[in-house]
Length: 382
Image 1 (tube, rainbow, N blue to C red):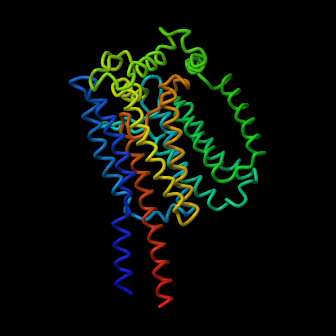
Image 2: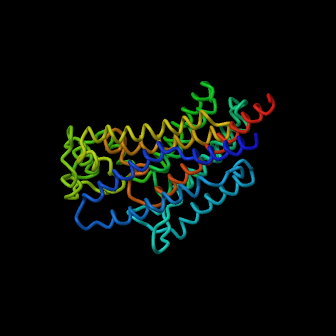
Image 3: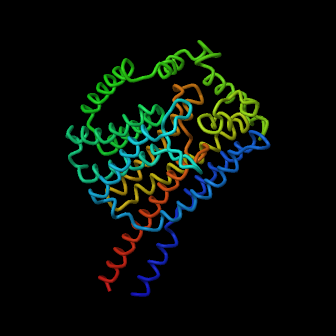
């Protein structure tokens, strides 16, 4: 029996990595890498992104090793939350201003954007909160308390200003509240409250250029040489890819720099131009596999925290994918948002692979618990 317990433990350790999930994420990263390489013969984005992908993969495997039982402690979770809020506050004092946004620290060799890890911390906080109160989640008090956590991070990110990340934070919180079991009555109240908040932000919070982006979304062709230029060029890039694309390196919108920020905010449009509809289907297939594998892991979790954390990470990715692709297709306002695992940048890439690493650790622990239970039952029968 001891031999069988040892063999079961070794089997759990070898199966802790969901290789299907990892290959899907890595395939998306490689699609972004190839697209960046095609921009020009000498492109610093490509070389730097290769390094970041290697670093992110190392972070993934390291993060998948330790158990994260500490994340179930209120003191640890609140420390993470306070630390994230502090970093987001300090960015207003020490942050670098790039393209009108003060949302990152200049650390010399690279920039660090604290809003990326803050999103994962928010998922951890909400998973911890709802895992203890899932039975009584219908009480509006818990919606308000959880909303306060999200609102603090939302406000600090919104006024950087980083409207895209703020939307993703709000969408992640809303999705986790729905997963936890929000009543329809409270959903109506929440929707009305959101409308009131948006009206207040429109009159007192949004900058003129942010308001113009929303108006441009409603009338995208009203000013294609001014405020609607980015949206117009993005839709042109996507549409010109047609069925099979123009080919790698032949995307004129990105290569000739008609498409702005093609390595980050508009990498989907740059990719679609070169790979066409067929390539977009393959890319969406990779994202679908990634989300399904995360949700399968959530369904196989042995406790509420692991299930809610996995669901929160899936919702975070879904929100980010929806905002980025919708923006590139002209279906949503231009807010500035990266595409998970694909856009250029180290902060979001390392954060995303780190989140997957935590999921792998939780997966191993869940399988270990099931194996130990099965072996215990077997020993009891013998």
